[in-house]
Structure formats: C-alpha cells, structure tokens
Length: 325
Image 1 (cartoon, rainbow, N blue to C red):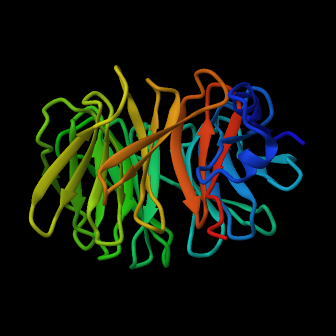
Image 2: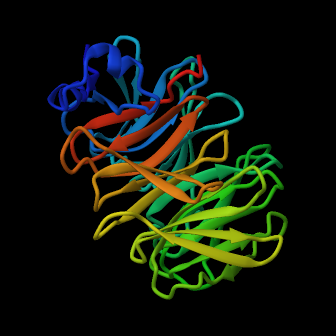
C-alpha cells in the first residue's frame, strides 16, 4: 500500500490505535506518484479515481486510491500540463502551458482532443480553468490573458487581461459569475460571461498577491493572498471585503477551495500544511503534511475528501473527514 498515514506522530504522543480511530479530526494520507511527475493540480473523479497533471512528464496521471496504483497518459511532445478539472461530461480538461492549448482526455477511452489557442496568440502560460453554466470553459494565462472555449462549437477566444501579466486561479460561482485572481496584479476580476470583458476588483490589502479564488454556496469569493499572508473574502452582494491572517509566523497561502459544507481550505507553504477555516467561528485549524516541503499548489475535493498535489515530493495527499457515526 503506497498510502502513508502519519501514525508515528500519534504513537510518539502516546495515543493508542483505538484513540487514533476515535479522533474527530482528519489525518493526512499520502500517495506516491511516479518520480519526476511534479504533480501540479489534482481533480477527484466521479468514479472514485483521482486525476492529476504530471507537469514535468507531459502527462495526465490517474491514481486509484484503493490500490495506490497510477497510470499516465502522454499528452504529446512539448506538453507541460498545469491545471486539471473534471468537466460536466465526466472527463478531465487540462490547461497545457507547453502546448498553448486546452486538452480534453476522454475518461473512458483515453482519447485526446486539443483545442489550441488562436494562432496569433503568444505563449499564454496557461494556468487554470473553470466551467460556467452556459457551456463555456474559462481559463487563465499568466502572461496576461484569459479566455474561453465554447464547447458547442469548439471555438477558442482569447482576451488581454485589463492589467496585463498575472491571471492565475479562476472559479465559477453558483450565480453563474466567473472570477479570476491576478497574482502579479494583486487583484481579482469578474468576467462578463456574455461579452468576455473583465472588471478589476481591488482587495483592501495592497500588493497582496491574489493567487487563487473559489466561490461558496452564496457566490461569495474566497481569495488566497500569497504575499499578504491572508485569506480574503469578497461579497459581491454588498461589494465588501474581509480578510483574516493565517496562523504561524510566515504563512504563504497558495491554494484555496470551498467544500460542500462551505468550509474553506487552503494550502500554506510557510507552515507546510493544509489549513481549514470555519467561516462560522472564524477559526483556523492546521494539518501538517507528512512530508517536508510538500508544496501543495492546488486543492479540489468531493464530499468527505480534500485532495492536494504535493508538487515538490511527487505525492498526492488527502484528508478524509471522519464519519459522523
């Protein structure tokens, strides 16, 4: 079994196996992926498997958590996949910065379909993607672009970001809106899903390095502020912001994700941990990673599970929520 549970820490603390089983907090479990994969993003699949981008191997990987086995699908010469999400069709969709294209891999057959950016588009350094509720896939490019793929026609459109370099994380909200974060620009932006125009929204902390964004069930937007050491919240209904500093002396919040219970999760490079934020109590809880310098760059989940990709140590990590019973 390739999964490695951090039981040793509990035994050193004098806890028995029964005590560990009775714990009410999740324990990080790691899964090895092939050496040199540099897994950047991870996406749990509906059938229980987990997709991940093997960035340095130019491949899409798949983990079977039951057996710990992995397999890779090569995406083509020059591929450097960054983001991966599971689409409404149940298949993984990839932002491939090496190919300057959106790539779909059929979940059943493994067939690869590429959607290149328009020929006149410079290297966009494609980052992350999100589906809206109109059959469009929106994506970001750190070189200063964002764009959309219209699924019905396969047409790819590209837009220059209003402040140039920086578009990074992106998300769609229940109300149909789409937002992206600009790391270099230290702001977030709301995209008009009809015209494609983006409106800049300034967080209260200057130069905070907004890195990733995620929407909760109320369509409020949570932001990981990489340089600002904070978790931000933008409420479009009231056009107001709130911010909370992460625990620790030098936190570095990279990824942010909101689960099905509206609990907010972050990855903290400074603390080498996954961090939970409860919006009701406004409290943080840190879960140290088993491996040193794991560098979780992205988080996604499904009910009862929080998954991250540990890019520096070639592992995936999961937190499974203890059952209420």
